[in-house]
Length: 393
Image (cartoon, rainbow, N blue to C red; front, side):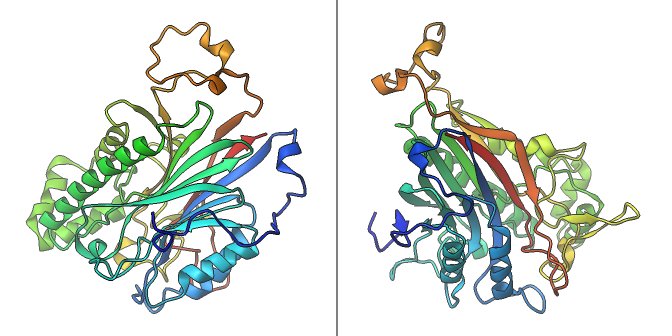
């Protein structure tokens, strides 16, 4: 890919500034924690929801919350008539994130008005990066160069194959348009799965695949606020009455998403935030709430959110771990008792005893609300973030 189209393997300078890291990676003998964050930053070009989106103020707040992370994946950092992306990269540099890649700008003869809004920042070297633009998009999403951003990150000798994406948004002006949005997301997911497969063919068994981002597909049941919202839509378009006739089983779309991402069984797909769920499904990451002293709920923010979305508690953001089922051996000792077929060619270095364990600590998954006090806005974004820890020698 042309260097002008996407920034790859970028370092801000010879001298690295790592927070809480005064050791040489090569000589480190104890397992170190690597913390990953995905966050939709809600930095749209020009437009605003209410009086203000407080974009520049929230970018400064970001510096205060990213200090404890090692790898950052952002969505909705759109370019075009603003300096959001350069400011974000500057914020990242101040915090010690010396490697980055981001969505490419549209070419002169492309149909897009802005880039895809994706940014990956890392304290660890990004040894390869790339992007894939979705072939299908509708509505306002069609003017952004939306897709998936890939970073191959070297973490002490092992590699994290990291994919950051932002799928088609839902539009509700008509039921027909809403259905087209859902169908478009299905096409995008298929393209995404094929892209992940192509990028991970040469991965080693101890490498990891992580897929993060804003999928605009909720894995949480509709609550009373969402039902009221859809009743309003039904008053404008009777097509929405199908939700009241067939019930509000919104989890079906999320299950279809995982099935598509499995690429016909090639990948095992694990949604990490499921372990945080309750009887209503996974925790909310959009239009989320806070609990008051009396046990009732209130919106986490009212300045950034549209009134119709307040407290609808949708679970749109994900951290997925994917495992290729055709790479099913870990070491020479493990391979002795294998009774299942191996479809990959075994490489000699794969059979050496592993000295650098590299694991995703699935039980560390958490929702990062990033609430803001004493300002006109109540949270860092209209989305909550998600984080998870990995360990590596």
